[in-house]
Amino acid sequence: MKPSTHRPTKAVINLQAIQENIKQFKKHVAKETEIWAVVKANAYGHGADSVSESIDTLVSGFCVSNLDEAIELRSHGVIKPILILSGIVPEDIHIAVNLRLIVTVPSLDWFKLVAQHLEDVEVEHFNFHIKVDSGMGRIGVTTIAEANAIIALADEIGANFNGIFTHFATADEPSQDKFLDQKEQFDTIVAGLTRRPTYVHSSNSAAGIWHKETVQDIERLGDVMYGLNPSGRVLEMPYKITQALSLISELTHVKEIAAGDSVGYGAEFVADKPTLIGTVPIGYADGWTRNMKGFDVLVNGKRSPIVGRVSMDQITIALDKRYPIGTKVTLIGCDGDEEITVDDVAAYRGTINYEVVCLLSDRVKRSYHDVSET
Ligand SMILES: *Cc1c(COP(=O)(O)O)cnc(C)c1O
Image (cartoon, rainbow, N blue to C red):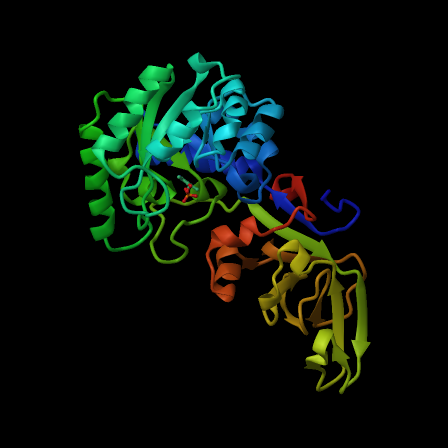
């Protein structure tokens, strides 16, 4: 789906904020660690093409979750290393290798399947990282023997073992137990390898922020780069980050309804007195989910509640006065002294900030300005 560009609803992305957040992170770790920007899921909803382009000189590589996301980056001109974080379909290995993408080997079984599909593959460019399951329980090898069997098979077919990595399940939580357990498991497997690859890495944002002493050759930086705290409100950030995304729209319709009139599906909201109602063109098809009913948006620096059900394409809000059509409505971001953060939305929905930004659908236009200009 193409974005709806003739609609006032848009996500405004502050690229300078993303750049600044990367620089701040570099200061925080203060090591020779390479930063690889995680731009999967359309850069967490921020727009993979524009984000990757704007940070290219600040990072050493990129991480995505699947082959198509990697192809998109290459098509957009990204020439830096791109690591696909999960196993691809074995039959597609020629696409990945011939585009010089780095693949993840999640198991010996997978690697054996890939070894049967090397006909059109320029094997000398077949670069891979082994994924270790140290306790997340999704994908990855779990023993030294399996890792070394992969290295042996790679030597046999001529593929290049460049890296090994793991992923923590609890780096964003106050308790250290599971984290330390996973770290020990990973360190043990790395120590048992027949040879150490160029890149050993384990850190996502949370590990880099709250366990910076454990960051190794690469930091896979996601959430924090977008100015979001990976723990939500559980752990404090050690330094200030700037949220890069705002979500804004405009009033398309303003009217006064009488006591007893209802608004929206199910006629759920019934006015108990004459009430000014504004309509805003955003709904659950944009990722503004139905459970946002009752939450606030900002109009003229004031909080206005969403009344009635969230529809597919529109919401209705109660206004304190009659505003003209075209008046700005802020769903995420600042207006005057008021601010609605991604974490405010996440808390109201009972989810995490990651989900709020990723759910913004393709229909929402992304606009790249400094937020202060809008
Ligand atoms: C998504 C992902 C990351 C980035 O995580 P953040 O918490 O957003 O920093 C890092 N590594 C892997 C394997 C991932 O899937």
